[in-house]
Image (cartoon, rainbow, N blue to C red):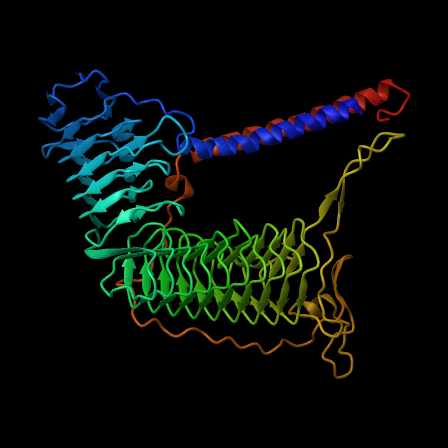
Length: 594
């Protein structure tokens, strides 16, 4: 018993270490651990310039006298770095200007290009600073970097003004209470990105691709002007966003943070990071939009967004899921209906940990992942009347329970028509057509699970290894009729119809816990009403982004290494545990567990 307990404690500790490692990697990207200043030219804490003769000092003003091809590290507060129109150029990595825990620094008149970070502000301690930092980025040209300017979430009180910020993957990653004035953002993957809880001061003097930014806080019953280039609504209500063309913006071409009872209609939203993003927002209507070719998600919801309606949109060719739902809280009661969801590089519609959603009457085709997926405790959701075809997989339920899936046409998907795995159970699945889904064997998969012996009970002999058993039970008929399976007559050539019921005489066997008792002999007639064509279209055919997650966030490689190493260690610990227990059993006549 002691050995077992010790082993379990070790496994638990290693698992927690893996989780903690994941969190530490996340925090390190936000400077939970102090970042070591890189090598390069230094403006030291004493005010000296080391590493170049191309920076001239006059008091607290440091002026470039020529182009520089190295990082400039600023270690002194209250100075001005004046580029004087010269260029600071990198090789695609590192930072152009690196500042850590600095206050009152101004960077101006500098051309910065081809770094991972054009200007990087970092801090020594995780958490909000006690006082605003009052750094300024003024009158610079910042181009062709991965991140133009980065302030981490907990930095505040800075100013970004009169800059030309172009052709970066991300323009400015803002902290909080950052003032933006008279900046031009052009051809960036995302102009300004910010966290859901940050509030910045961004007015219409800033432009995205020549159009003004409308960043509204605590506004009510207004219509966004038709010349908008980016729309952010914080703590608003009754806002109308209509007839806009939005490209090259931050987290969303349209972002709603804690905004209610607003409408987003008839817009063309393309080539942003996310097309439309909702956080903690209720009772909004998103309809008749063309949402295409965004780097990540077409429409993304998180943070307890409830009772929103997403209908009659064309959601196409986005870099991840067409519609993605991540329930940080209890994200419930949203409706997704009559949308065309096609050609996305992830899932068509992905519901993670949400309840009481209705996904009804959508045309979901040619998505690389699943047409619809329910993950991580999603329950009591309804999927009805959808056409799901040509996807990597029809419907996926993983750790999802008590969902209702009825009257859907699930046809010619590249994998299973429907797959259930993990801690799934009690899903109701009937009156669907499963037709020619391209798998060897059944069109449905209910994954088995391992049944582990109870090591806490006394053992009189060598414990048996874990058993692989059939997956949990789901309901595949309503007591009278089940589903149509195009391979039914192939599997059961002697089956016949029962009277005029349209039901086959032989049940459709999936496993001992999952049986369609009343399979249909003929397919159901299921019609889908497609959304109308968009009122306007992008200037060219949407092309999904292929940027990886690695390119979008710092330190993903470290995360992978920690996870892989922890998994190997845990596996070795388990193997060692069983070897030792087996050896102990061979040497001692008494049971190894008491």
